[in-house]
Amino acid sequence: MTKTPPTWVINQLITDGDLTPDRYTRHPQARRCPACGANTTAAIRSMSNEVVHCDPYPTTNEGEFLAAMAGRRTFFVSNYYGIETRFDFDILYLPADKCGQIHAEHQCGKPPLPKHPDFTPTQKKYLNTNNQPAPF
Ligand SMILES: [Zn+2]
Image (cartoon, rainbow, N blue to C red; front, top):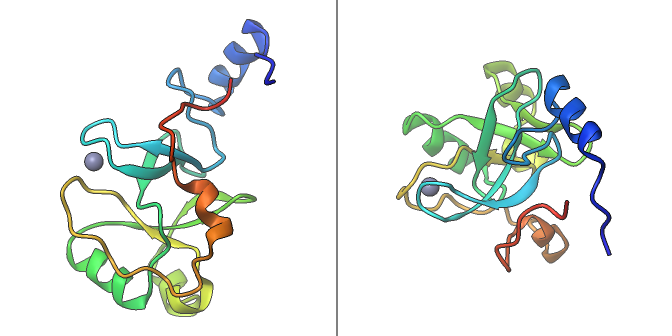
């Protein structure tokens, strides 16, 4: 059973930018797109207060290229670092095929990008299968 943190803790986290009133944190979580309801991986982006919704599957070099051509940003997603923006030098020196943790920004109604072949079932913890909010 999950215990709810005291209100003052929640208010302090919101003040510090580590939690939003919608309960997004800096830790990537399985969520639903607020506009279309698609499965996403969402968190507060590193070094900002922006909430980002990514596709729930990591993509390949080809997928990152297709995302860039469609004007979609790509992000490095990890439990430790959270969601970080990919820049030109990141794409050049850490290709998506080699990394396996590159997710494209979610855009409603866009066709799915190629999934990284190393995406394993253990990573499915990012997929929201029961549409439940964060457990607090
Ligand atoms: Zn959407």
